[in-house]
Amino acid sequence: MMLITCPFCGARDENEFRCADEGHIIRPEPYTDVSAEQWADYLFYRDNPKGLIVERWHHQHGCGLWFNVVRDTVTHEIKAIYEMTEPKPDLEAL
Amino acid sequence: MRYSALNLFREGLTGHKNWPHAWRSPELKKSYDVVIIGGGGHGLATAYYLAKNHGLTNIALVERGWLGGGNTGRNTTIVRSNYFFPESAAFYDFALKLYEGLSTDLNYNIMLSQRGMLSLAHSEHDLEMMNRSCNAMQLNGVPAKMMTAEEIGKRVPSLDVSKSVRYPIWGGLMQERGGVARHDAVAWGYARQASALGVDIIQNCEVTGFDIEGGRVKAVKTSQGTIHTEKVGIAVAGHSSVIAGMAGFRLPIRSYALQAFVSEPMKPVLDTVLMTPATGVYISQSDKGELVFGAALDLYASYAQRGNLPVLEDTVAGLLQMFPNFSRVRMLRQWAGICDVVHDSTAIVGKTPVDGMYINCGWGTGGFKAIPAGGYTLAHTIAHDDPHPLVKPFSFERFKTGALIDEAAASGIAH
Image 1: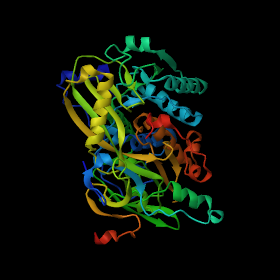
Image 2 (image 1 turned 30 degrees about the horizontal axis):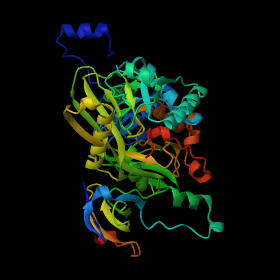
Image 3 (image 1 turned 30 degrees about the vertical axis):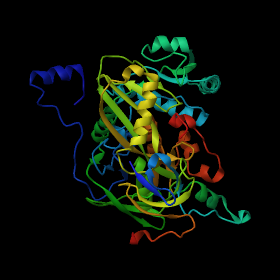
């Protein structure tokens, strides 16, 4: 069971949230120059790390805010929470 | 020693003290023709079919923990082939056919019980979609039939078929050949025969990296030393991305925890495998009398083999909706396995970006039923350096070309 601290609402039960895949995935552009490999990589391929992962979470049944979470996929410990517009933190330093 | 009534009698005369070990525990050699990573069902089956069908016996199978200790020993033991697309139907029905002959083939009782796999429809629309699935199965040569609510009530008397429940039963899709098999026995049976054919099974041996020269695999580095080899087969389910990372490529996979639950043993109450897409709950009763059930994935990435509380609550709620009379049943155990989920719920079997390295992954929540065919086709792929015809559509190519096999039936529910 995870307690997730929404940047707007504060600590809430994980039930209220939805995990929406890995964060900081940038859509390749312009589309005219995007190869099939690049497109497959963008759509389907993921790091899927055992350890720290950066994810986008959505406070679906709360304020509706989207934000980033750094979480350990083995212990489920949340190391950092930051807003969508902030850059990816240095995971080594966390 | 063969397992037979005669040998059982003979050993009984001497107090069963002389049965040999089911498989050897040899020392790891410096080099092998093939190294298989992963001692679950798929890895063991691959080693067995490489030796049996392709005459390759200089094989090491390395397993980080113990045989069948991952998803093979953690699933709800259901076997079925009620798939929609021709590619999936062909593959999974081949798996089921191998299961049907497996006890004899392996000389090991896998306790296959084809008690029927029944999926429920809860609305007119569900029923229409299910009729479509039933037709597709029949067109694909997989016997299936539709059942009415009345027939289902007779087949599963303890099921709540009243009209007033949240998910009333409108009918169902039955695959009579579906059922359950003893999961540990599948792993042990393959291990025993693979070992007898000369495969070295090395437990407690963790892969830590690879030697790759000019895009070709040369050696596997493990906690017990380096193994030189030209061919590597990977069958590590939820840890596929970790192993692929060591070899320098990424996979279209996300790892999620899938929970399973077992109740205290009870008198026989359920003699079929029941599944409802509405809540995702699937349930059967084991030969020991325990209710064995599960439902949806925990929907965030996880390598923790335990699972979360919200999904546990949803699963139990879904179960009690179907069987209110189970409300006082006590739970014995709960656990989770780490599933390698692919976007289109179809597995990946074939070559990787590294020459000489082959992979079997992406089974998601349904790897157990695929074990015999997964091993059979990966063995063929390794031996011929060319994918088996059954798994040609299951390659990495499909993510580039867009020829996805979007098989909702793989998970049984929409994840």
